Amino acid sequence: MTIFSVFALLGGLALFLYGMNLMGSGLEKASGGKLERVLEKMTNNPIKGVFLGAFVTAVIQSSSAVTVMVVGFVNSGIMQLSQAVGIIMGANIGTTATSWILSLSGLDSSDPIVALFKPTSFAPLVAFIGIIFIFLDKNGKKKDIGSILIGFSILMYGMTAMSDAVEPLKDSPEFAKILLMFSNPVLGVLAGAVFTAVIQSSSASVGILQALSSTGAITAGSAVPILLGQNIGTCVTALISSVGTSKNAKRAAMVHLYFNIIGTVLFLIIFYSLDLFIDFAFKYEPLDAVGIAVIHTVFNVLSTAVLLPFSKQLEKLANISVKDKAEKDDFPALDERFLLSPSFAVEQSFNVSVSMADICREAFTDAVSLVRKYDAKLADKVRSNEELLDKYEDRLGSYLVKLAGHDLTESDNNSVSVMLHAIGDFERIGDHALNLLELAEEINQKKMIFSESATEELEKMIKALVEIVELTIEAYKTNDTELSRHVEPLEQVIDLMKDAAKQNHIKRLTNGECTIEQGFVFTDIAANLERVSDHCSNIAVAVIRLKNSVFDTHRYLNAVKNSHEGQFEEDYNAYKQKYDQ
Image: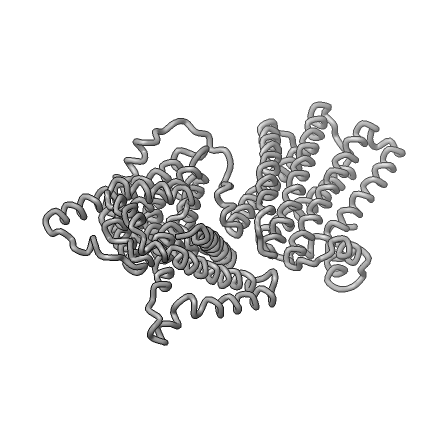
């Protein structure tokens, strides 16, 4: 084997790893987060968990990605540790799908029908179809499908390149001696674990072992320990991802590690114990890619079958390893592990923004209640909610900025943009709620009593504002564009109400019906209410923009403000009549 063969091997490995990454990324985008939602809604049935874990892993071609996602679910409180155990076991079975796909490279091409299934036969066609899909649709679903096809082709080319590069090793006695060392169970397991931990992908390390099998020097005796070690090495990714997480998230990572260690020890004990009495002759026979896929599958299926009934004991072992300490539940369902699955992260971010919207509504409605009648406990609640809204904007905004830096679909990118705008408006509504609280405190402390006409005007404005806030938040939560279109007409009427209140206030001052001090408080209340309606308008327009990525916000607002026909005019007149303007 020359230096050029080493270069070819490294190039093949690079293509192999890149193809696997590209294919997995394409599959993730094409699924639009649906696979993660399946995991999120898991029941406490461990058998169902095994099947779903296997299915999702087989689709996205990465047990590491699934276990990291599970750690994120547990860390965020979306999933219980007991639910995670079955999924983790299933992920180990699902990852064997990759080895079966790669085993196609070892097919005998002498039969024309069989040759159709060899990568060298169909990979070029798959790549060609993939590139057509990408050119036809550079931002949509077809691009994601094209990425899957291109990734698969690159993966197969890399596999073939690695096999060709190591082919000269089949006649090398030195290479045979090195492989003989791995027949030692301890060395084999250690080598497999370390190599997999370095590249952080058991699918990739198994694929490399399959490529080496083309030399004919890989035997069952050397492959078994290496394969078992590879299952242990893949746990490193989940362990790293659990750093800085909750105790239960760390336990989920430990369950993954214990499952593979215990499964490996049991398999080695049974295999080598039987070998003492039976003397497995196949240990010395060359193993091809299909044989490696068989051993990989048998080990993971048997490990799951044996350890699944002891899932509670695995959970207890993890609890013993990671002891309980007092922890503060800091923030809802936002975990950076979800960034590995951008579509799912977008959905989780939206759920958190909906929680923020509900807090915003509560803060505002409580604040206007205080204007009507002051209550110290309710005032404390408004302050607490306003602080919470600040925290939401900070944490969710930072998370969305990180998410925007990932490779998002056009739809997800638009969603992130809308959320970034909306959470800013939710936070500003919270600020105005705090302003209203402070004005209510001033009214209470100074025992202010507004004139009958001023009280009536404020009450009308408050009712209109409660309606527009309810309308806006419901439209945002349901992504209802038709509901959103009713917001701007009401906002225009609220502008009229504020202007009318300002004019009437001047008249009352002139007539001596209210003092200057009362007038300042009155106009500040009206101004804060009107600004809340402006933020509602911003949110409603953002919802409309989400449905149409090329929507021009300013053009829309200018159009509806200058419009005197259609639905806008009808709603506008209805709201004017309702609020007597």
